Length: 346
Ligand code: SF4
Image (cartoon, rainbow, N blue to C red; front, side, top):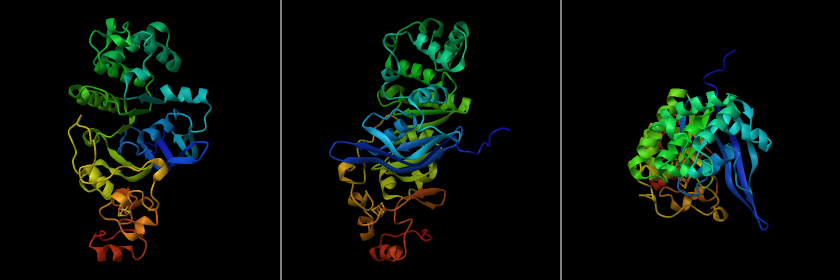
C-alpha cells in the first residue's frame, strides 16, 4: 500500500532540550512541536539564541554535549529517531535526512577529494559499485551547477570558491536521495552576490525531487521567497507557525509582527528587530509568563504571570494571550485599547 501523501514526513512532538551544568539545568528548547509534510519547505526563523539551530541539530542527532534531548519525541515517516543508537542515527543522517550547514567545510573533509566523499556516501547509502557511484556523483555535481564536473570531481574542497563548495555540500546532502534536508543558515557564510543563487538551487533541486526542507535562517528575505510555512521561534519555543503568506502579511504574535516589520532582500541580515527594542533573553534569564513580555508593546498584566500555549487562529497558531485568551483577557485588552481580535479563541 502506498503511504498517505498527507501524512507528516517529520513530526516533532513536545521536544525539550536541556543543558546540564554542575550548578543548574538550563532549558534550551521547551515543548517544541511541529511537522513537515513530504516535499514541504518549512522555514524556521528567529533571532540568534531563539533555538532554531538547536532544533535542527536535535533532529539530525548532532546536539553538542552537554545538550541533550530531555523530553518529547522526533518521528521520521512515523518511526521514532530521537532514541536511536549513534550508528543507526548515522545511517538515517545521509540516507533519509541530508544536512547542510552554514560553513561548507563542516560537511567536507579537506583531506579527500570531493569525488571520494561523494562516492563513499553514495556507495554506503545506495549500494552502487564504484563506477556507477562515480557517474552518479558527476551527475549530482552537474545538477548543482558545477562546471566541468568530470574534472572537478577529483579536486579538493580548498580548490573551490565558497559558493561552489556550498554547491558541493548540496550535492552531498542530496547524494542518497533523502526525504528531508535540514539546512542551517546555508547561505550566511557566502558572498551576498551568490546567496540568492544557492537558495534558488536548493529550492529547485528539492522541488524536482520532492525533498522536504527544514530551512533554518535569520534571513527573512530567504523565508519569504522559499518557504511554504514558517515557524517563528523565541526563547526556545515556537511563538507562531503558519502558512508563509499569513505569517508575513497577517502576523498574530507581536514578536512576529516585529520580525516582519522590515523584510530585507536575500542577503541582508536582520541584525536586530526594526520595531521592537531589547534583546532575546539568555537561557538563564528567561522571564516567567510570556518570555516576550518585557519587549512586547501589547503586553497585558496576565502576560507576566502565565505562559500562553500555541492556539489556532485561522490557518496559523500563535502562543499569545491576545489569541488564546482565558475569560476576562479580551476585556482587559479592550480596556487597554490593545485590541484582541474578535473571535479570539478560548
Ligand atoms: Fe505580548 Fe502578552 Fe502576547 Fe506575550 S502573550 S506576545 S507579552 S501580548
